[in-house]
Image (cartoon, rainbow, N blue to C red; front, side, top):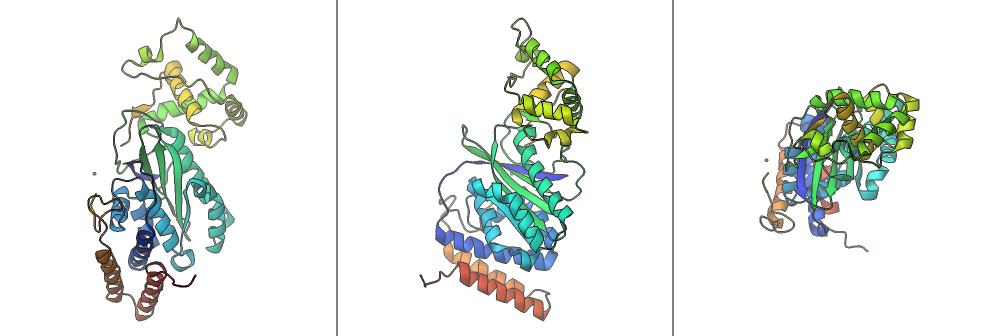
Length: 370
């Protein structure tokens, strides 16, 4: 798995104004069209999986560099702008309830793109695992509320998803790419962007390998033995976890999902990925198994947080300056000229110009009819 980065942003409320959303969609369409026409679908996936490029795109589209909304609004603009049948790229999911529609959208759009049943099921599995891992295997206090899954007619994919920390009022963004997928649970980070939260359970770190193996061994044994180990830990005469771990002050999650562990025992998962994929294996159970693996087997997980932008037209909230509408409209025209002067053949160039013109009329100039 190529996991390319994480971004952490202040959690902002409110909506982007309609006049800005229209321009964002038109500009997103022009940018994505040129990238696909010039460099291909894979390059657009690559860029979306790069947190620096994605943040720059949000800023170019006029959104606030320091806002959590840059994730949700930028992906929504892309979803509205990118036509699967025109580009061979499908964008699924979104914020809140839209994130829960991802699996169904993958099936629907996968059929439209002519993907086989096996490929569609593989994409659905990737979507579920990406969400499960960022929600449970990396525990920095963020709960996912936004999940955007992008895939091509070749079956390649990327994920842009975001979690929130209600207490700190911050958000953290996660990027995934399907290129060079080796494992969902071993994480070779290329870039990590955000504020270091300090003590963070990171079961995807390479140094957590021993803990991952020990966690699997634990669930393969009878659940009664695990309950016995936890009962011993609850004994007030035993060392506290803080004393055991020294500088770390940790709390054992007592609300472990025992039904899920019974299911794991009956299933006998082959590895940590299979364990995480089981229903009911959530953050508390993952953390409990990690702490027990250290205390019983001496296999400690990683506790380090796996954790650098500019404006083109301003930001929605006036930071660092209000959106300059005239310059934004001029940029859309520049994109038109870029397509016109590109190396596309006459037929392809005329088609690209027509599509950009139609899209601009649709989103930038409101329909006067009711």
